[in-house]
Amino acid sequence: MAPNVQPKMKAFETKSKPAEIRSSNIEAAKAVADAIRTSLGPRGMDKMIQSGKGDVTITNDGATILKQMKLVHPAAKMLVELSKAQDVEAGDGTTSVVVLAGSFLEAAQKLLEKGIHPTVISESFQKASAKAVEILEAMATPMKLEDRHSLLMSATTSLGSKVVSQHSALLAPLAVDAVLKVIDPLKDHDVDLRDIRVIHKLGGTVDDTELVEGLVLDQRSAGSGGPSRMEKAKIGLIQFCISPPKTDMDNQVVVSDYNAMDRVLREERAYILNVAKQVKKAGCNVLLVQKSILRDAVSELALHFFDKMKIMVVKDIEREDIEFITKTLNCRPIASLDHFLPEYMASADLVESVPTGTSKVVKITGIQNVGKTVSVIVRGSNKLVLEEAARSLHDALCVIRCLVKKRFIIAGGGAPETELAYQLTQYAQGLPGVEAYCLRAFAESLEVIPMTLAENAGLNPIATVTDLRNKHACGFKSSGINVRKGAITNMLDEGVAQPLLVTTSAITLASETVRSILKIDDIVNALY
Ligand code: ADP
Ligand code: MG
Image (cartoon, rainbow, N blue to C red; front, side, top):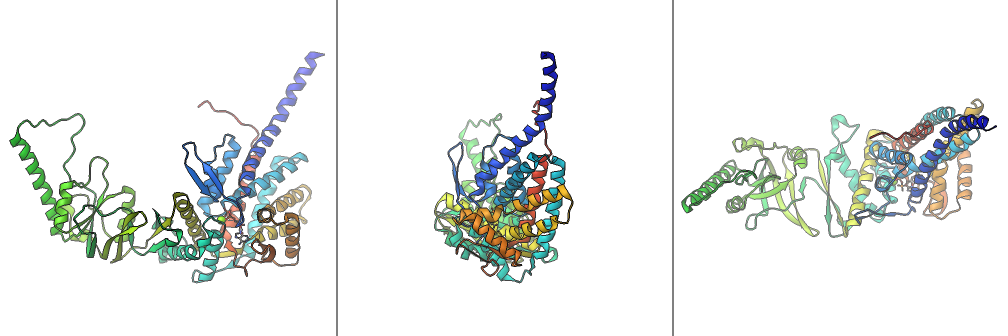
């Protein structure tokens, strides 16, 4: 009898393995989605993340939470990638995308349990998400970049769910202005957020955050007796060092008598004085010096000369900031003393070292031929608030960038998801059997967004979502959950709007990830 049982068992094992792997993947990914569900929406909670080293982060941003989570399961890691993808694509909606993926997975799991083949589910979900994008595009309101009200509304909505939401009256217009200033009129369908330089400065409150038209350098002016304010500045940006070279580890210069020692010092002095004189001769009165890792870029002696010549020096400019600085000032970096010529320099009305928070920054304003960049100094009374403020500002900037890329807005507060659920269900009625079934499941799972918003706001989720569904069935497309009033209202009237791109990209990316999770039937450990 026994030999008969053996092969049967084996066949059974191999047959059930894909299903087991699939369900373990789904469970793992769902667990991640559940973990950040409570952060969704303006009444969502924040997370405190403690790193192995003891660093603490407080945040509400899905991408930031997931990035720092220590995950082992490979399917769970896919959700981290998903939220990163949304961060790159839209910048906002990083929590929503993961919550949606979790809900799609749950729907898929139920369909699998009914015996529907994973490929069929996957194809139906693809169809559903393509249709969803179509529906969203049809219901979106077109807008123009001149329409400041819509821009502000979207930025405020994005900031509304953050720790720093009470400062959105300041941060929202700031984000709008910053993005509008860096738009290139020739390529006005995208903006490079790298043209907005965000500087974090501890001290003061978030309300002290400011937008500076011009350039802000994180460094203070060097030297003690030299000028820290310069009107009618001629600015030179150098990439070479004004200091004696350091000898290599292996080489040594042994100076054994005093005369030789004096000669070395004299030579050094003469060399540095010559450099300083040439700088002065070129008409430069503000010198920016790139940081050098090999030695002090400007020696104490050189600083002394510059102080005497009334040349302001800002040293330790980071290599990666050079591009931004040259773009803003419209100058060229100078790589050697031979090229220290007036035409390589920039002019500005004022260069000034100003105290900001617990340290100082150098502000350059009134720049001639200023490039299309802006600087923002974000302030916060402690490191946690400061960093979250900067992250929230980044989300707001991304929202405006989305609107520059695709100029449509839709209502927030669960309105688009409910409308999608309603219209997709209707669309499913015209489809054949199994496909219709899968599409209906997909449609229903979209309601996780209004459901979660209601739950997080302390409302009765079932009652609220049912009410909302009725409203949409009656044709009120912009009805959503007003979490502040605890009622269902027209979200556009309430000023809760978001870019179309955030929602469409969340739905397409989430369904894409879910489809790839469904198609996995085995996990293989690699050798290396
Ligand atoms: P995400 O990281 O996905 O952007 P958020 O915590 O910012 O997550 O929450 C976004 C969700 O909250 C969106 O569905 C948006 O429509 C909704 N939302 C934002 N502000 C409001 C509001 N004032 N009332 C109701 N819903 C809102
Ligand atoms: Mg958001």
